[in-house]
Figure 1: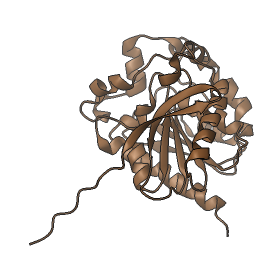
Figure 2: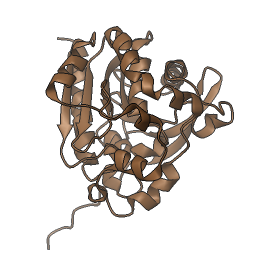
Figure 3: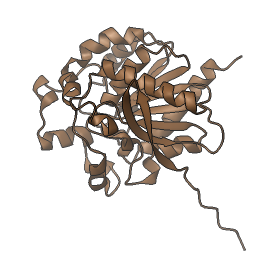
Length: 291
């Protein structure tokens, strides 16, 4: 009689707190069964939490368990002003300030746990901006690259829409067509949603100017992903090429993900995107491997 295949047991995801220069940052971590090959640090977007990278509607959307099953440690942090740090930072922090706390929290984790050959920063939307800020001031060594989604450097919307909190507009811009997401996503995602801190929100319109000054300081490989139904950012070939050319990176590229909305990591194509993140991590590891 043929044997039934053994069920795949996902690595456990657990809550964690880390010290970010006196600010307690919460998050989620998933570690592989053996020594990790690298550490993937994931930063959520505005109005979300670390659980964005461990989607509750479908286990296949979890970046954390996928990364751990492939031999990496995956650490998703609640950025300063979210999660545990909300009490200490009721108005939040600007993105450049967040970068210092995030670097400190990653340093804290690396001091106490094995992390393999280095760190890949993964960021979505405002978390992508925080990841680029974090990379620009990285001095600890071991930064392998940055992989971001949900950001560009040229707005595709009118200035008034950037701070419009109307539910209908906000929902359409952030999610796109409902069919892009697994059943139950919107009900279960309520546990992931948090207010955007005031200081973070205040900076939103300034990103094109900030990126122009920041990009040249980033010296590691960078990959941008644009969802097919991205509404916030211009992603035409000319705009994307100009954006990449501003980077000081040895390697930069962009990709477009079909059948995806702005919140890529919660959608039906999340696993495709996450596998491409891990493929980029492999490429970054290869670049630092001895000949």
